[in-house]
Image (cartoon, rainbow, N blue to C red; front, top):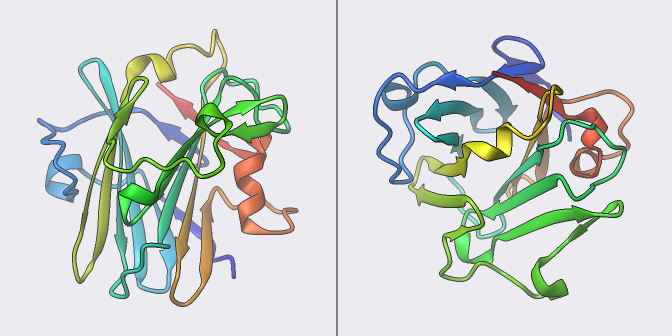
Length: 206
């Protein structure tokens, strides 16, 4: 089932400065990040997401209300760094496929129209690793839900050469088996199809 996204501004996200210091401990709050950049309606309420700039880093943060924890719960963050909006993943496209249990997460990069896993290993997972090429992640899970912070080098958002980077989010809640996306463009057969369509992702403006 695909729920509509509640967008607080438009389908273009502004890369706003953080209102204060960011602790980067996996805990996410309005007090730390300010008003959410967007919210997505899910069965537990509204998942709130933030896009903030602080120093030489960009933070993508989320709080997802969910009182039925499962290692299969996930948050997928897709990013088109070049802003070319190809119809399938290319080398300038990245995807962080974070499970609620981070050890089971996967980080992908586009190549010739498909997502490629590191070393072409289909069983590759983060394990205990929490950082990679220009990114770091922290997450916390409680009885109320789970939160996540992804810290990216600002270069991920400065390589579009006059175009705007693109971004999309997809949440999976294992109970009651629902997929929820932002943006939510018409014409997609399944919510997960958004992950493979950079041309349908929202723009990120400075």
